[in-house]
Length: 376
Image (cartoon, rainbow, N blue to C red):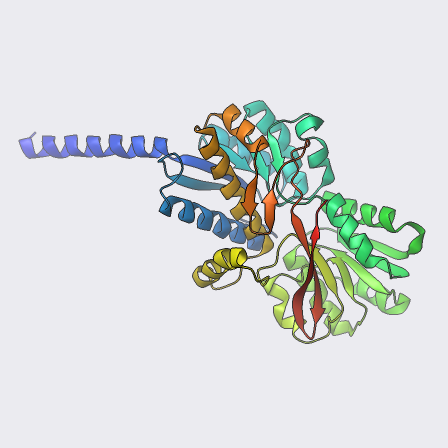
């Protein structure tokens, strides 16, 4: 072997050692989320949101002098797949903090995984109340939630829905859909009559039988609880049928997938309650939404906002902990008082924050923020 080849091999070995050391020094945030499947559109937005947070943090010098990185594994938004993705993130990717999945059932399945692993998990999208009930003083000290749960959302929705005498329900047949409807019915009590309740698989695309029924029964409103792509199909078929009653509850009116339909004016008086909408104007939101839109050629969905703030809160806790030690980071999260885009993020005894929510209505073909409402 020539001297040149020996030197080249030594240089390559040294480079590998340096690269390996640098990689080991990275602080890793892991996320099991929908890369494929019906919710992949939302998965892409979550990836963009996390990457923007990581880029901003690294441009400021990282955390504790170390670069931050984001690792995503495909969960298809299903519990079993989410658990497998999380276990890979923990055992192979060696992430320091985990972010909860999109779908509530998947996130709920992750809770015993992070408890066993002793790793903090920040839930910034899933809204099932049971997640909050089981966290903090509920038993699982590793789970923190930055998004309002369905009890909090339901209180705002019920107040807004109080004027409707008859309501029909169209919801996905998941923990999210059924729990949200149950809470709405409990909140409204005898003040409203629920004419019909239809629950559909998240993969369902044909809603003509339900819409035919609504055209006959003429409810005052249709309460919709669905994610973007499925909700878009409902709205397309709603227009085909010439329906006029408002969509209320959690229809995905914030989604860029439905903007053109809103512009038709056919959804005026429809409304929704969401944790975030990119068209809300404030200096804090502009600092997030404008660069996101410039880079990705579309405004951030609320799930992108959720993951962005989840990464920021994780980085803030690690910085205050002065370490990536799991127990130190968990203790720092408990003491969080993070200045979020919509207000301070502080955790209660169940490690649930009480961020502001947005009540939005469709006026003259555009979705507008009617008011910020407390998530308490």
